[in-house]
Amino acid sequence: MPKPMHKLRARMMETDVEREDCVKAIGCSTGYWSERMMERRYFDLGEVYRYLFLTKNPKRYGVLAWAGKLPLRDDMWYGSTVDNSKAVRYYGRIRDNTFTSIEPLTEYIDVGLGSFGRDKWVIIGAETGNRKGKVTPKKEWVDKICEAADITRIPVFMKDSLIPIVGEENMRREFPWTERRNEA
Image (tube, rainbow, N blue to C red):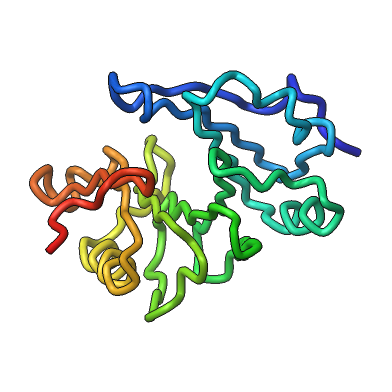
């Protein structure tokens, strides 16, 4: 049974003062996006927003896409949470905007050439909080993910939790809808 909209965690964050960087992020731990939620009326707040969906259950995207109920819009981004090497991702239709959120990075994830598929963005973050057994990722793990993304020219966004691991000077804050830095 679909979760009601009020049970979904939704938050808005403005990444910059510029209107083109406004993002509405919507996350759902169960990944059970309802057809009603995907109706256009929930997302007609103006051209200023980009909608980021993030789930640990990306199979639901496929179900909605197959049923013709997953919107195919430039302002909608469908993300999969990858927190271990066995996690499943949504590869998407050819025109879907997909991304992978590797957060929390708790183990070495072998990301070889082409491992991001059709993804247009990678987000990386470390585990936060004070959980007993908390894993702090190694810099080499982060570097390997960045190298794989660079080979396929995929922008990388590192969350603040990585500052103590990679250093402020090595932080990458790239967005797929803006020019990549250090382009030759």
